[in-house]
Length: 330
DNA sequence: AACCAAAGCAACCGCCCTCCA
DNA sequence: TTGGAGGGCGGTTGCTTTGGT
Image 1 (cartoon, rainbow, N blue to C red):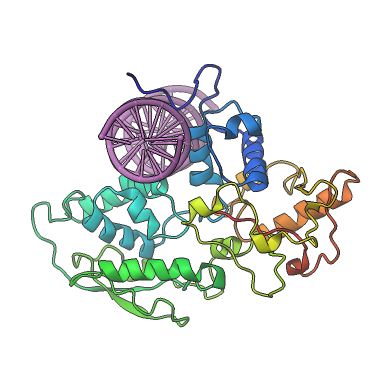
Image 2: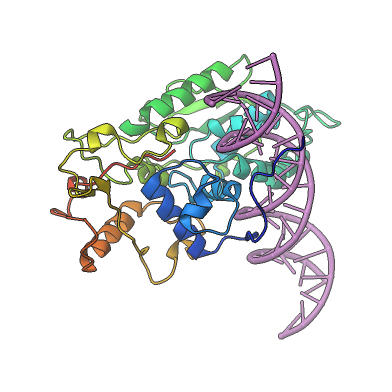
């Protein structure tokens, strides 16, 4: 008995995603959460395979993704993890918040492989290709800690995993949670892969992506702490876009008459999809200015006069005062 | 300016694993 | 226990961009 294809491919669109398709998918996921990818294209009005939708979301549209090149630190971490785990990109990616397995895999194939070969290292075995390279421990400036409360748990996992990986010869990631910049001994096969001038000095104001991932929409919880789930608990987020505490009658997204969630149809800030057109190819829709993007989205929906939309923005500033459900991303 | 090759990366393919009835 | 469904994962493809001539 043959295995059924993941979907009926007849009439389905393939190839690059358009802005319109992205918008539909984002709209759908934000409204309904992630659930049953096979059903997503139909429900979202997309002529795509469910698998394609999932990949597009996880690899490109997810709000907690970092964009842009891997930092030297991340690159080094990838190399070390690859030495231990091999081509298990998802495992490697799980140690790099905001990075996807696909992204890391691509980066490995296009950049790191070459870099290692240039240095006389076999990218497969991590052993010298022919003539051994003189080995020196190198120091690398560690990145700014990701210490917002909502991803504390995530961070803790990363730290634990990193420490677990810390065998005799590799990375010391202890004290990652320390807010001050430190240098740590960083010895991956003791091959210096970066020059000192290549080391980025992290900005303690925290990464934009981290900030973006921090609070997508504020919780209606009465506590002042904005909490967001970690990026790994996919099952808990399935088909849920809010926590139980969010489901209070005070929630402005809750249709009081029908007891249903009402989300606005929204337009992304800008006339066309600005997130495709950033100058640096680094700042995506979800990056630094995410909260303001959502701000615009909410305000826009609020002002378009559509009575079916249940937004009731009382205090647009600060954003934390908005009465809207917390979106759970993973 | 035009052409070509190489590089980069998003997306696809198909196998594998896990869950559940 | 078994088989189907759903999703995850790694490898590969092919389109787009970039750089060189």
